[in-house]
Image (cartoon, rainbow, N blue to C red):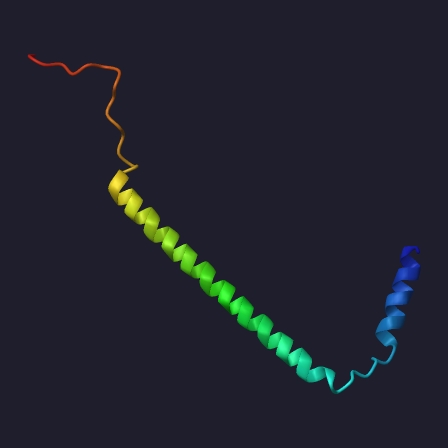
Length: 82
């Protein structure tokens, strides 16, 4: 199927009258949509909780380990008596 045939097929589908949807399908679609929204909301809340916990753990680690401080040099012995 070349490009012109695909475009013609898409135009045909778009100009055709839509197929009527059975009325008993609506409640099932609403139920599934609500379940999907609840699941997304739960996942979003869990992700935010994990981000907050990660920030808290990083802050505690940084306060304890002081990663911005250069460690003391171990290559030169300390000089005493000068």
